[in-house]
Length: 529
Figure 1 (cartoon, rainbow, N blue to C red):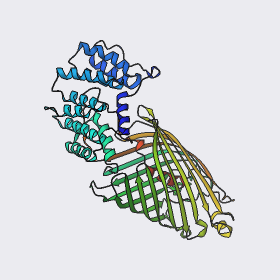
Figure 2: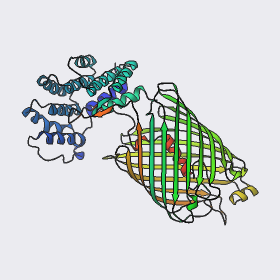
Figure 3: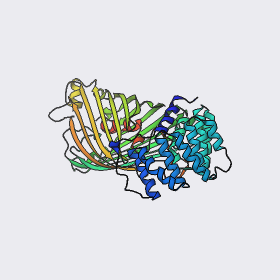
Figure 4: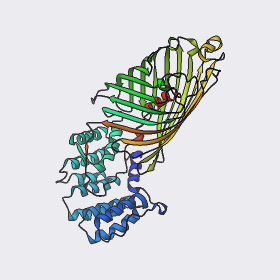
């Protein structure tokens, strides 16, 4: 008996993407018997107009060329997208009679049987002698066997099939979705051993002092700005329940305005630790030292931090906490800090992916006027607009209260005799290009503000800022277990109707990325001022 999620998968595979006249596009002119032209037009119809147009185009052409395997598989795919598995199977069987040794046709027939829940017929077809012959064909056979085992609840058999695919080292491009889907189900805690992200940005700010790691003191001047953010993570590819991991980062923030150039900074961080667990839940425990350097001749080291961090991931929910000591050049700000929160992600309508997080923090500073409690709410949505272009929108809201800043201490530290309270907000919106091997170009607008009651003649901690940034982002990973992609045997490849829940590109953004944005929005990593 198929479980509910796989029933849904099969239904999606059979129904495909239903077309609509309103979505129909011009998919090329009359092909007049030109098979490559017809296949290209059929692919366009399946993507935009719907399967009926593809069927009407391919059916008479296959009648004129009954031995053409490419036409047969394309027509079968159109039938499957139209929910007509009977004619899909009949078309494929007729083609197999003309080419009994064609392994691609056998795998298509097996998938139709799987889609109908006829696993015995599918296994009989896969067990016939003569196929598979090449490594990608062997991988397809194992993936189909693994899918059936997964549907039947045989986790061990499904994992063995995935191991066989990894051993073969090659899959057809069309089979990548099925590989990713099964791998995510049966080893959800596994990540690529090596991951990296590089972000380079340049643009304009209306307030060069906004977001600097020190108090603004006064409204900054307009300026050009540059950013660089490099992140690297390594986890040895070993199947241990407890295993080491390490990540590190480098942030650079440059300001061109002469009166604010000294607020340019560099931040370095490292986080070695242990990961516990492999399946639905993984726990990370680590130590994080970090260092922030200002572009100044004196007081170049603004702070150094030493923190313990714990992070628990259970499915789509991430719980995090951390704490330690942060030593500032200005001794009164040196503090003990504790923070934590939770985050999650979900998709809506297949085109929008949301990331949400809530965090809280508490600081016990050497100078009591810098004691603080606060919290933030974060949200990001990525919307696929088509053609690989994404719309990304984000919002961060924060509240911070300096509980012990009343009286004379508050006057000395913040310029007021009442307790200081800050509200921060950052809104972003931008467009991102399609991905070229993980490389994307984005154009974003950022609006940020801080509203503070700490305002005096010489000090004003409120600010407004408008920024326009052009950013180049490269996010990539290396996983020796992932098989190499080979050319599909059919012009219109087999569509399994499944795929990983997360895709390469902006959708790789994680809750941890949101937290780093929260730190930046509050002004220089973990420093509020």
